[in-house]
View 1 (spheres, rainbow, N blue to C red):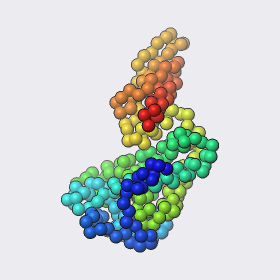
View 2: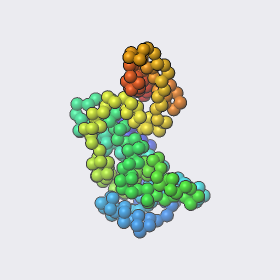
View 3: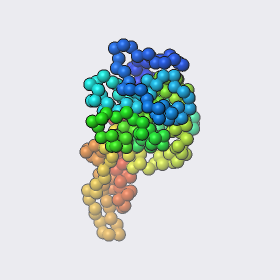
View 4: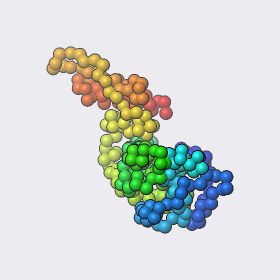
Length: 265
């Protein structure tokens, strides 16, 4: 919660519930108005008629538009920041209610499994968000529309736009409809002790390269092998493990890496 309020307090909002958003004269404007097709799509996924289309246009504006408009438009990066905070709050509340016996560490781990970039991109694809991104003419349009990073950013920005246009309750409804109903909370909780999965999810949540495992030694006779495995994250060795099976050694290495990252947090 502290992280959420810190993010929210550092973001200046100009929002009047139920009224159009008014941008100060010295701020950048959205790239353009929404196409009729996008306006229809937006109404369908939101389940309400927007008070103003401006925040939604901004949410759909990829940063490549800035290059083609001489910095006269604003991309969705600031709204992504706000949407990330709102999403964290709603998912945290959902997990807090669903798992009353879980401690802070387990709740944080489960949240990371839900709000990582891969998952967010999947939620974005489920609503065909990529088809409605506003992309600069000089950019690789197909690559951006399929990009995991672009989709995840725009999905969070869309949540930020809902919060600005309406309120937290409407953002909650959207998240529950397009995120919570698509996940199995029980299954997520059950894989808590799969350290390799947890390490992948952690690195995704931190925008790090995926973990790489390397067998550094193999000792003993065929029937009593001992494997030593190192795991690297972002090119740095962060854990190692030794066991009779490579898979077990990898799990031990991943567990050590998670412990290392937790001590740094």
